[in-house]
Length: 109
Image 1 (tube, helix red, strand yellow):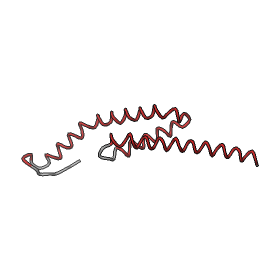
Image 2 (cartoon, rainbow, N blue to C red):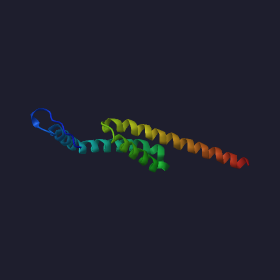
Image 3 (tube, rainbow, N blue to C red):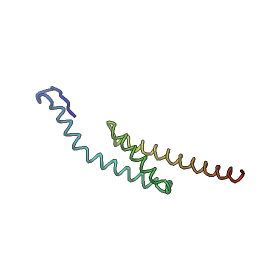
Image 4 (cartoon, rainbow, N blue to C red):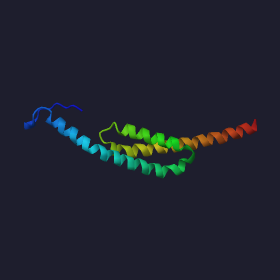
């Protein structure tokens, strides 16, 4: 991040340097917050997806990547991750229904 502002007495780039330092200091804290939220959502959701845990991990990783591109990843991640996990659960349920229906039709043929 290279911001070149010339405000106040700090001289050229002082605002950019302060923002960069603040961002660097917040990085580990944000990673811990997201990691904790990710582990919590995984623990709560994994019983519903015992056979498809890899899809759960993929959904959480995708949510983390997308949230990391926003200004407030610690706020976006939990909501986005929950939505993605719900979508995976719905997809798995739909696949089970399709498999059961296919088996019934296979027996009828």
